[in-house]
Image (tube, rainbow over all chains, first blue to last red; front, top):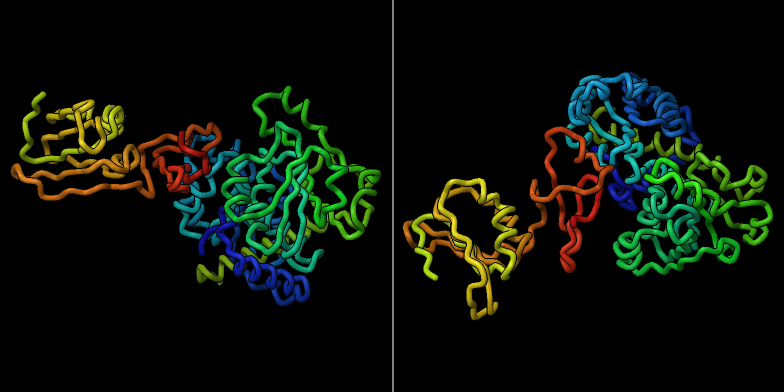
Length: 307
Length: 138
């Protein structure tokens, strides 16, 4: 394997392997502190990102490696009209592994096709964001003890939310999974995801607009932000952005062992009062994301014979 | 209507009536200077009506395009006036530079010199998706 473009590039066995590596990193950080010494991660971020970029950088530093960056796409070769393919070939001469974020869907795939070093997709437009999903999976694994027998509520923007699509893809491979899809009519899960993933794998699901009524059934509530950048029309964004706001009042409907997740950043869809609720796991997700990125960097560098 | 037999080239037969012109265009036969005949609505025992394309020259033809437009069409290879090979292409697994992705957010819309590639993802419903952004072909 020399690329992780989509979460399904990792089969359940490889996910399990990364989770076990991440758990070992958490337990024995010193064991991993120098494994990537002398190796360089190139972070190519063609659109703004705070947490994903810093998470990748922190991950590489904690493995003892270095990071080289393209800090601003507006002042880089991309602004001069260089293709993604040429950037990939060029960066392959400098680094050992690439993490790329790009606003165009499929940009990470083009990078992987043209790079001679491993490539990790750090988000390609509204398409895929596999390392967010690995963070989600480690969080579910650590908080719920595994992936089987879970009812997962997905709430908010299920139409454009790439993390939602990836999580559905990843979780559909486990036993006795149910989904509750909570969204306004305009932001419902696309029919191709329902058909190609849920119906194809006989995964039970229900669609609702009512968060409160769905809450008592859930083991996991995955909240999402309505993303301004995914709308062509500002009016639609303004009308839909406050569809769901999770408050302590609404949390009363949830079971004591339900967990609340969110890929972050949040705007106002989870009120800050919920942060102190022990069921709120979204900042744990951030930390888990770093560990899983460490595990992925290790896996890809090992398989490429670079460490 | 009589169209002469060809000596060396390809006859694409059993094209569903009405799809001949689309195939003619997708094979870019309008850009060649060889002799090509597109015959529409020919009476057929098998299909009642069919289209036929005869290309009277040994030029490269993307067989995947034929399979995409009509997987039931037959391709007859003619050499020295004789039929040397007859095949049904079926639905191709991959199409390169036949379709263009319509998703304005797809990298194929902006990247220079990129091949437009679609992969068959649902054989039963003949669904092709862009390999970059997974948008369904229209």
